[in-house]
Length: 487
Image (tube, rainbow, N blue to C red; front, top):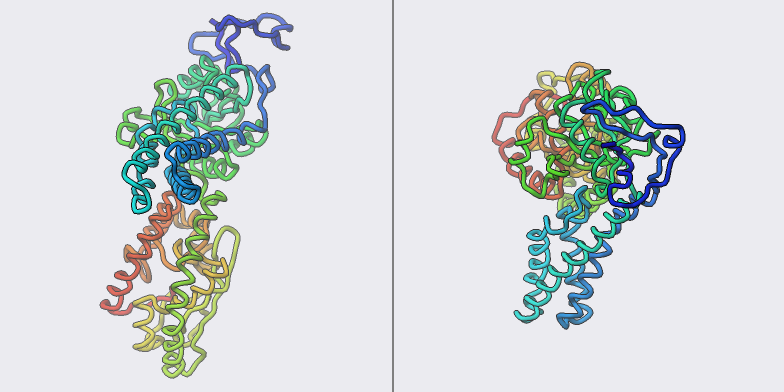
């Protein structure tokens, strides 16, 4: 049987129009284990509107479902709008607006029921029990029904060669070969593999798929072939895979991992993984600099930062007077630091040290450089409070990797693996490393590891958790003896 990524010929009883390859003559038979792939530009039409359709398909169905449910339950316009808004926000926050590769609405039935029920409970004081149950039940049923209809329409479009997305496989391995074959045999999945990139020419997959380059070439291939979906084979991971995946995420492509041990998926919640015709895949979180993520983080920074700035203003003013009287110097200290990807910013702190040497290149604090007041301010990190102004200006975030001086940022990036990766996002006033006691004269490698963990697994909830833990961390710092350093 001829396997083709872009068409199954007449398998469904429909004649397939001839393409250039057919006119040129018959192809040699595929060897066992090979997957026939037509070059990009075959009979399937890759529309630029595919991303738009996938982005709005389920949200549009959800809006319609909520509107019909509110009308059916007899809820007034104001309450219906409030309920609908809560449901849509919950769907977005839960990641339920993302279309999986296998379009099955029933896989999310339980989560949809919870999303429909919780807003009804929140509005219970303004709704009767019967109305709350009715609107939650109607919403659940309509969400499932309209999503199922949307999935059926999209699968039909895929079978006709419309809205098909190009996929790229990173790494050659048996799992990749199996996935390629499945995608070729099931056009209703809407993915057409354009090739593979790996660091082993002649590997098992590249023997049957076009080898488009090495793993490090992945980002350029993504743009050249208009790839929107990438599958990284964990079994064929190389040192260049992490850098390539991060660059690809920055281009807006969806990235999923084929686990080397399929049973790994059993340890993940069902809603955190996908399966493609029986093959488990693990979606990678969106790029840390994705617009939606940056918007959510900036909104959180402003909402909380304004409150903290108002509360901290009188404290900072009193401490500034105390510092001026203690050191007989200007109470504020300003310094240029790396504040984000390719950005520098001037941060402001309460002065805690007497001048000694070059503050931009001095790592340790000399004896007698800090007063008793300075040691207290540094130990509790209260000297960082003036940086709230940088947060409000958007130069910093409330939570993120601490900003470092350019001189040391360059040196540390040369000797500590992953250190430069922490500069992918905006620097923060506090961070995941800091609430674990990693500040001052502590392991820089550990700090980098904690910072990169935070970047990859960020959420609004994690930011709130870190902010809450910052207070006891500051109090414990007040109980410890102040240590030297210039952080």
